[in-house]
Length: 391
Ligand SMILES: Cc1cc2nc3c(=O)[nH]c(=O)nc-3n(C[C@H](O)[C@H](O)[C@H](O)COP(=O)(O)O)c2cc1C
Ligand SMILES: *[C@@H]1O[C@H](CO)[C@@H](O)[C@H](O)[C@H]1NC(C)=O
Ligand SMILES: *[C@@H]1O[C@H](CO)[C@@H](O)[C@H](O)[C@H]1NC(C)=O
Ligand SMILES: *[C@@H]1O[C@H](CO)[C@@H](O)[C@H](O)[C@H]1NC(C)=O
Ligand SMILES: *[C@@H]1O[C@H](CO)[C@@H](O)[C@H](O)[C@H]1NC(C)=O
Image 1 (spheres, helix red, strand yellow):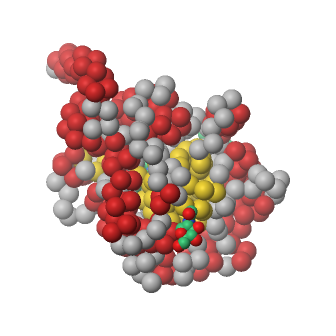
Image 2 (cartoon, protein in one colour):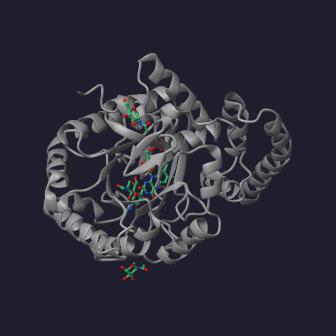
Image 3 (cartoon, helix red, strand yellow):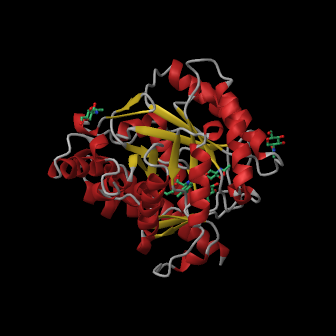
């Protein structure tokens, strides 16, 4: 039995390699053809195990083998946020490029900003494999990577190399995590802020991991206050010019009273943060999921998360009176999905799971569609549309 399955795997791998050659030629011809990717290239990639496919995606980006986009970002997609000009509002969410390996390729694909991480202080292996699952019928993914990370030191050197040697001027966020065995989460974040803050355009602290025992309790109000106070102090201790904005990423599985608490805390002077990322994967399993994998433990992302995420963005935008910029993420597959998050209060959006199902052309597709939707509604640019549906 083992042999048979090994044989089958080898055959799949052979098919992928052989198709790879053919596909490469075809890709050059059909460069960035969205349907071709969705219907041919990505299904071939999906003959691989999800984690191998992820690794392939990272390597292909690392060596810049992805077809670079020929879509030129128009003025209407430009947006200024955190005193930085984003060429377009579509970013890659945390978790794809956990260790800062794929930045140049992700830039080639057309992302307007890139979030690295989560990065933990010390390198750690994460959970046992398998730990990523595709739910294809649902256009979803379940992951329980559990913060596999190369650690601060390695990621710091990659980022310095990107900035200095490769002259990379892409907007780079760094998402900070904590070691699984660490009993002082706040200290792990503080170390991360001091170490990676100087090379980041923004920092994200992450307070809800269903996979990292103990992290959920962070959402307790006082714990959150202490965390934010310490994190801000660490950030403010950095030299001027190396003091990035500090963002908080929220889980979707929060009650309304928890949201109200969080909104209050993040608006108070001593715990005020610079932005929110809404939202992370969910531990909930909506009734409508089809795939048998829905029973796997972990965080669910992709299309099933879309509506809940947009609703949460609108709620937090209202609760914070639009005073705190929001990065919207969860189930963005189309220009309309992005537009809805922007209208609900997101200044920019991110995606991950749609890249798994549609490949690199999804980025240009979303941008093109978003430009049309903005024009249809008479908006000159993205910032004019931010929060317009909840005002
Ligand atoms: C395989 C995988 C790994 C992820 N790893 C991280 C992570 O390390 N840190 C983090 O903050 N979010 C992580 N996320 C969550 C994404 O950043 C994003 O919040 C979520 O997937 C919703 O967006 P999507 O529906 O476009 O995928 C991960 C998501 C996936 C699918
Ligand atoms: C977007 O348009 C507004 C006018 O409505 C303008 O003030 C702003 O500078 C524009 N933003 C960018 C980034 O061009
Ligand atoms: C931050 O979010 C990512 C996304 O899932 C996750 O992998 C990581 O565990 C989180 N880090 C922390 C410290 O919560
Ligand atoms: C995680 O990092 C902390 C530093 O904050 C360290 O004390 C701890 O030993 C690390 N854990 C592992 C497993 O490396
Ligand atoms: C998001 O959820 C994932 C798993 O679903 C977890 O690993 C990660 O720590 C969480 N990140 C944040 C920022 O909440």
